[in-house]
Length: 111
Image (cartoon, rainbow, N blue to C red; front, side, top):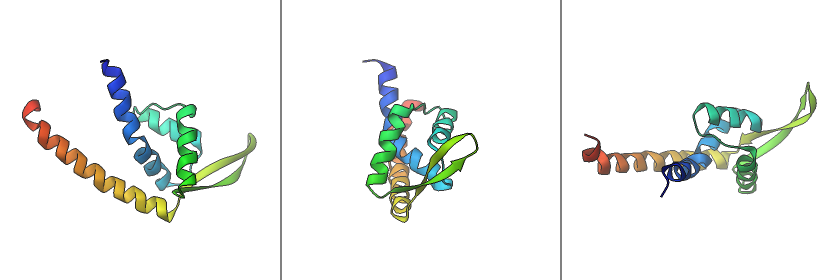
């Protein structure tokens, strides 16, 4: 088993929460999402992000609007819906419980 594969799977597991969290701060263009994820070392490519955004939009967790661009065609900006914010809040609770459980079960190993 390769460590890099496991690390990649762990990142993918939290990607939905991270993307929703980024979008919850402000309406955002997909390349800005990728930039923020890369800064956080959650490296994502467009081929991963766009299907995720579509899935979240189809689940009514996101909406989008078009905004004119100074340097080309209009851009699609995503924003979180009320349903998406509720979903994200539940993900935060689940994440906190999961981190607590993992920390508790691995405490002896890391000491």
